Length: 175
Ligand SMILES: [Zn+2]
Image 1 (spheres, helix red, strand yellow):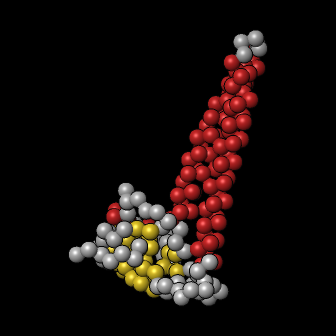
Image 2 (cartoon, protein in one colour; image 1 turned 90 degrees about the vertical axis):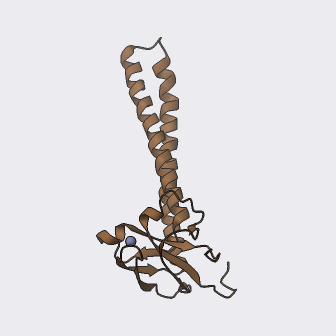
Image 3 (cartoon, helix red, strand yellow; image 1 turned 180 degrees about the horizontal axis):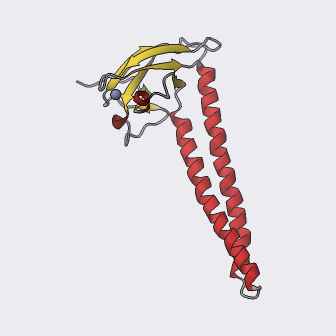
């Protein structure tokens, strides 16, 4: 939707992970009050290949290769996360139906014990599925929000795992 206007450089940050936790971010944007290496660059245009950038952490000297994806890559990342989130919703719904069907049976004292025991097991399974589904749906919903179209070329490396690449809102730093 913004392809017709002049593309703006985006500011990315290679952050030490301990600075990341507990810091709420909306739409993959982080505030300026972090410590880490940041750089500004133009994301590759639609149809262009991803750009590989080598970054080094200002906190612990870890060097990593990150890959900046074009807009289509970002959309694909978000679509995958949305799909997994939807899968969580599906698990939740199936669990709800299972519990909804089984609980009245388990509660019906007119029915034989064996049948009620089976229904109780199904109801418990359904409740667990609701909880699991909710967790999965929420986790991937948040992951979808935090996708910024960047992948770590050295994501498997021990040093890289301690870091996170984020996009920074374009407000100048104070002090
Ligand atoms: Zn570091």
